[in-house]
Image 1 (cartoon, helix red, strand yellow):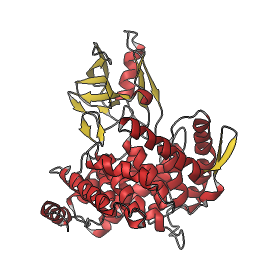
Image 2: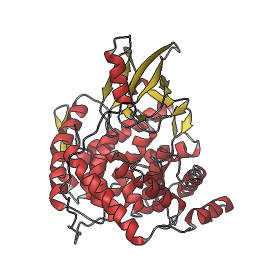
Image 3: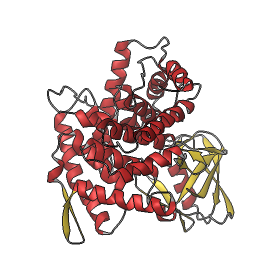
Length: 426
């Protein structure tokens, strides 16, 4: 039986309020679905397995485009993972999303292999080995080689693929939830709690974790408590970009999230205001709005799919530069704590990435480099100093002391403000 605080929270979470008509909601879902499908033609770099997963979990499909994207994943992403494995790099997160994407297309995972150190082995074998390495690192330092979000993805991918997750591997996730180790810098990570909830729920549903079922149930209850406690007054859980995964997790763990629940209304409001313009953000939100979770992949059959999703021709979007200039102060704080302050005027509406490029072009001693990720470019080097995952460091971005929920390519400069770029550990 759930504690009273959970029951009370769930009742409030599921309660309905006046919300949009069913037709309006359906139209919004269709728009998001089409926007995600269009992103396949505009995305740069390695194809995104999370986008493919969301398209495959949707109620409406364009089978031709989805098949073309699957082929890109099996070639471009596969080769990228192959290269990382050959260089002994940890790729558990990408490998897990690749597994889920293939599984969502009902693809035979036993036909996918990678070669490392001159030896060819199946995808799932590589994923199990990656998880063992992550687990051993937790034994040494109480944290994975990567992070608990990727570790949770690994547990989830193995579980939905019908692979029995080693009890020692799942126990590490249970203990991390129990001791509240799901953190990003100084804050608890809503995304990690959500992914861990889906992973552990899958393990629970599989019935394989029988040695300590009570501890597993306790961890799941705690994760529910945490996710409910992260709710904001406007209905979002954490922030606009973590709500989709949080709702997915609550649905997976058996919570009732009605069509008119505050979190659903919050996501729809954000979608209508174009908050989810990043394909990765849409890919995590769309399944939740359709009341599905990544656990749905486990039972997907790919039969009798609605192949009616058609993209209408669109006119090219011409973005006009604003004549209004705003001043951006950029503070860089190194790992040692040394700070340097720069300033640049940029057209109102510029992205933070565009602002940083303008600042770099002024040759005032500010330089930076970016690397690609599923969320878009992220800062890897600033003024010659790296923030590497291997050192458990990253560049934390904030605007007027408030942490940014969007990356450098998505955050827009609309007013004079101070941007802080700080080399932070996690």
